[in-house]
Image 1 (cartoon, rainbow, N blue to C red):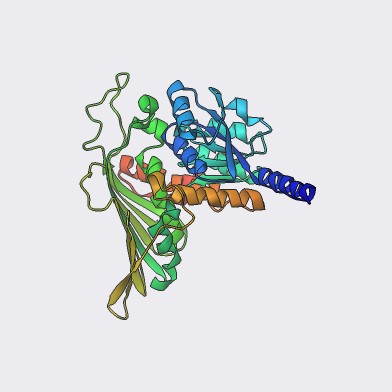
Image 2 (image 1 turned 30 degrees about the vertical axis):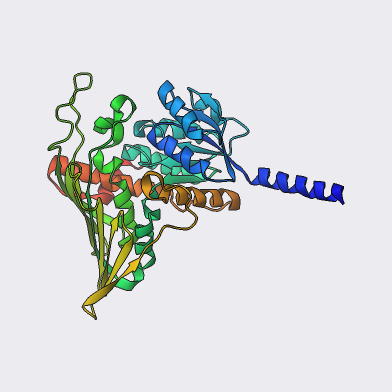
Length: 376
């Protein structure tokens, strides 16, 4: 009997080990460590390796791992790409490094979660999207905004407004945080504010608005933030406010109102989706969704609570945790990513179209902009 129980225990242990997803983390700054903290709250994963070229972020990673993980530490991410004990990679290095890191990853069969924005240029985003289609592993883009509780509730109730005609998003918030080496102060490194920050909102627009984005018109500036900062003789050039209108080939349209010198705002984000039968309204952070109906001329608020699966809320209201759970399920079940490189490409495309519109003062045709970069 004892031997039988022992064998059963061994089989159970082997099964748990076999189901454990082993991660390598590339880039251990703020977001890399946030990923580690989310993984540390899970029982069925291991962080076996971390890589960052800078010593301080490597120390942050070990602190985030605590007693939960004991990873190998590398200064060169390429040292972990061929490791047999790494099942999945998280790319959380600076935006401008994504293309080179992904080119190296595509030479392997590893699963990968690539932080947003997918790339900083349209040509690079097109390249990653094409390569991902031939890659054996899952390629998942870290657009976790859709998993925020109130946003998830909005998506669940979308049909109640009929055919969506308008989507309005307002983000009024604090300035960009400092990053290692202050790389996020320049458009050439980030892709620009509309790519770096707003790709989340453009992804949401593409989820809720029918059709494909066809034209982008934007107005924006750097009016307040970082004007008194100088790095190697250069003043930062990132936008801190903008209005962006996105037209879709269905006739619907969406709008983003962005301000990054509005620390005193009541809500950081307000979202409204209006259809021919009603309207959805919510906020981030928030705990309710308002559902308005045209036929009644009134509406109701429904409570929104945190998903019971969330064990770590982190910087993004539990959305990163849920993102990881879905990624893990996809890896185990060998199913496609829920957030694809096509999603990542389109979110970058709208951001770059907005940036071009601001620079030229002209509306930008989305298909024409994309066509310029396909095949390059």
